[in-house]
Length: 131
Image 1 (cartoon, rainbow, N blue to C red):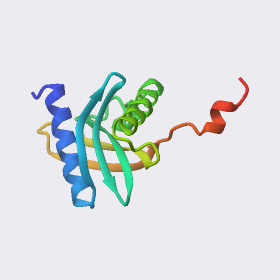
Image 2: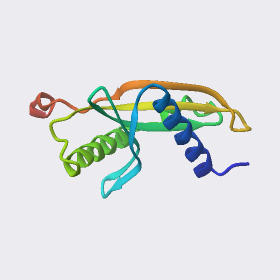
Image 3: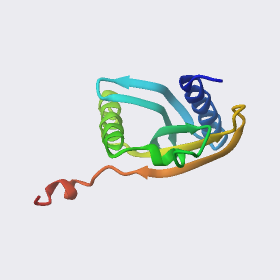
Image 4: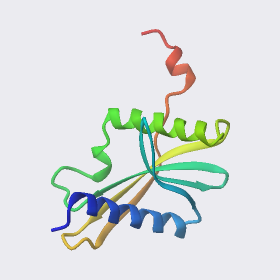
């Protein structure tokens, strides 16, 4: 049986291949900073696309994309903003996508769903609302 990290790495490789096949340029994989990690940073049509890859070999605990908690969403947004700051891309258009992958017990691809703009950053107006 493959280790969890091996399954995750396999899923990220499948996701990167999928993105390339659909016209995305891969800018980085497993980009890290103090705030967190971005599985894939890609670019397409002048938009920076941060991709969270979720890979599962069973649906016993729900669909892969359902495993993204509110805390993970916040971490992804903060890490994406750190990437933009570090690469002087503060004014760039960007989005966070999720690629949900289901594998069978032999790690063969059963399903790959690319969910565009799956995680949205709060708008400035949201942060101005009174509590």
